[in-house]
Image (cartoon, rainbow, N blue to C red; front, top):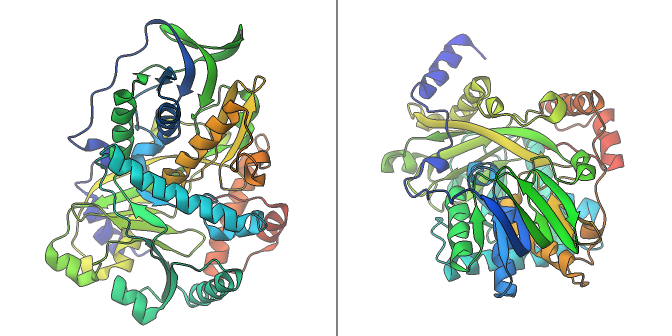
Length: 472
């Protein structure tokens, strides 16, 4: 990147605040008080992100008389649930290609369950008046290289052969640029119904309000420190008290699980995003983004981008940073070198927007597992359930995961618990230094594939055969 170009692009960042745009919303609710003393309940939910919130809400909807407590270590929605891009996808498998490769015999069922799950989210938004800017506008996967356009067309033809193309349309260069005008777009796959856009923090806050309205006792600034059997149930110790519960659902995702044996299945990957100032009508017209779909490009190191309710553009992705040792630390949430890179990519995609300023920059940790999509399980003779590993597509899939956790705790066999995806786990990550070395080699190989027409080297082909991955 030439110094003059770098200077031109980085000037757009001069006024940006290093905080998540979504979490600065004036509608942010006050936190609930911390737990002091001892509590008892039927169901204890640990984690105040989407996983825990949906679990608590659905538990009360299924059984209104059930006594439910939710613990959050900081504030509801402060981590991944309040920092993501707001893409609420129907896919439960981190995209159809991943699902078809891993569970070909179940893929039609998984697609149907995912579509039903997204419908249920839309119904919950209406039923509980969740003010989260929900727009079911769909998503376009765009090709920015000739080989990517060819791969998108080939994939669309495969989808048609498999009977999986319902609601999806292939767009050539002219058609995709009629939807959103970038000189870099060469083709696209338009999923018209399978993705909704929303304000991620407002969704978390709305779910919290809905839980409270149904009688869930929510304690914030209350980390769960230990999990141990206690009589016929379980006990969780907190800094100022404890909770004894008949059943426990763990929705801690990227944070170290209270079940030590689960920790090796996830690693943190730090993802970063920029948010522009609101675009004027003329600026919006210059890129023709009339239908407000979410977008993502087709490279291994990909970008995702969308419009907010006030017509800002969120631009994120590309860099995926794994910290040695898998540590989750606040200082990793800010990475200026990535912001400068993303700003350059933004103006390459939309040169007609040169002069637009960025107002916010931020990052956050994603819980990644080796198969990219969530895994599930139980412990302590079925008294504890957990879900984790959503790998960046948890805005929608966490609701499905909440239902799985509740099904598992009930001990009843359901359509969800019968799935191979639910019954089997991914391979765990190796200890250091092997995890860091393997992830670094995978990232280097993915970047090389992007630079060489998508050709995957021996390392990536081996990882493919083993069913291992690292989301870029």
